[in-house]
Amino acid sequence: MKILLKAFRNGLGALIALISRLIPVKKVKRDAEAQAVADKKAQDIELYQFFACPFCIITRRVIRRLNINIVTRNAQTRGGMYREEMMKETGKVQVPCLKITENGKVTWMFESADIKAYLEKEFG
Ligand SMILES: N[C@@H](CCC(=O)N[C@@H](CS)C(=O)NCC(=O)O)C(=O)O
Image (cartoon, rainbow, N blue to C red; front, side):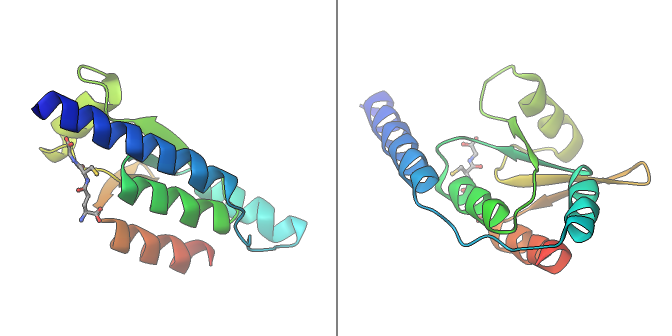
């Protein structure tokens, strides 16, 4: 029963993720120079996530709207390197989570509301 519920939840999440991808967002517009600066800054950020997690879907929409490329890392697969890394470095697996590397210093940021606020401050 538990396994069925989990499959249903994942299936529904995946469907919502796909629908969300199809719904356009109004992207932030920048001139080429500002876009290059944003692109460079975004290279320091990775999004640890599950494809079908609703909080991750919302976070990916924020990223699309802000018109930046942030690499996504699959933290769902058990035994996968990103899940293991997150567990080792933060003591838990919770997504979405940003890994921000600035001048060699790594910061892990949890909570979709905090992530949204941070991204909007940096790229809005
Ligand atoms: N309040 C958190 C909730 C995040 C959350 O519940 N994430 C779930 C996935 S939807 C999670 O990380 N679960 C851990 C797991 O399934 O191992 C947020 O807004 O980011």
